[in-house]
Length: 524
Image 1 (tube, one colour):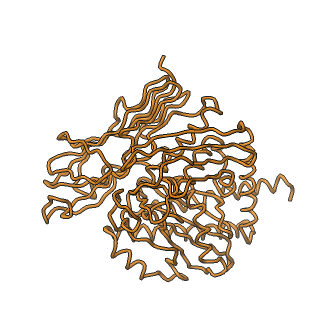
Image 2 (spheres, rainbow, N blue to C red; image 1 turned 45 degrees about the vertical axis):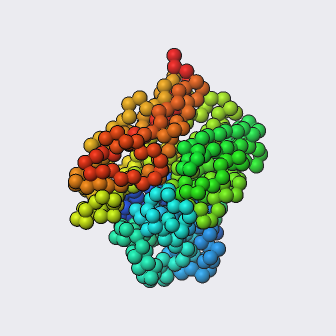
Image 3 (tube, one colour; image 1 turned 30 degrees about the vertical axis):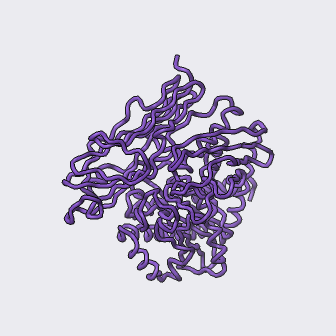
């Protein structure tokens, strides 16, 4: 085969591989029970070679899931060597330090076979609505309080379901049917993808994936290195202050560009919090790599090759590298601001080509009702639902910031109709928070304002674990004004100041205003 024809076949195989993982992600979207997965797209899907190296990811999904999952598969293979696996096996864990950063995310890994020969792996992740413990709050002071920890184990053994694990999960979560449905959705999407991969290889007369995989990884790595070589050499620093929990969080980063690649060092960042806002190193790595890639090479495939060019270091037991058993449920509060910090480091060497700061982490509104809420009657409707509040992105040098856009997570909002169908809650408002974006030559993106009431004469609770930028706004760049800070209050006037769980009294309303993005440049 001529070199040109060989390259064409490789390109066709690459597009087919992308189609496989996109179908994998869409199966999960269609089969998931939890709204944060099927409506907001808080998931990831990917294919790996027989060494556990990520080759391709679905576009559908979040960087926090995809990039943590890129390294998570290797942890599985350390415990379950490839030669011990057989058709019908499915592996699972929700280990925060070896998975995606907190107990709510389950990672499943399925070996793919062609005529009983191992050809690769498929992995998928999604966020389940509940994992027991104290719920989606930041008030825990250790991971043991945050819910049920599932170590690396077999979910399926040669096609036989691990009913003991399912029984333990169902007995420890508040929404057993939703959690069970989501986990089975993970199994299904991997299974479909494994069948598609085997069929693809047979169609092209191939017997293994590793040769193509090596080409994909080496080509992506070389392209990423070439992109890095176009950058100035040196070290640049950035800093950011977040509201934190018991005290403000200081984030410090030193970004170094060298011939070897890009290295980000978080020395000087705050120590780990006593509460659940810590970002495990795997999650810190994931969003740091994403931030670098957004600036340096957004068009290069995201896989083990391109990710290897970015390295990260962080002090042990810091807010960006907590040690077990630190609490980590709201880890995205810190982790999802790291791309903004990376942008700040790049501002000087790239001479004004990076945007202003945005709202960063999404606000996850954990809403609960029923007899367990203080002041509720025994006959009050029991519910446990999630809604998502989204702030504004920072303004770009030549364009305004995008409003209510979840950068860097990429998740969508859950339709109000879905939440209202699952609970007695009513959304009286969900609209743009006018004026929340910072002024400038380019205006920052606006956040959303949400107003919620209970249609029953009963109280409900709101977990404010992930609500930040209520005291420290998204900063403008190049003379642009800061975005407006967020605010959470009751319609009756009381401000809910912290990250605790609060009760909204019967007859009152919850009012949440998301932070806006910073402006760019001085206003003419």
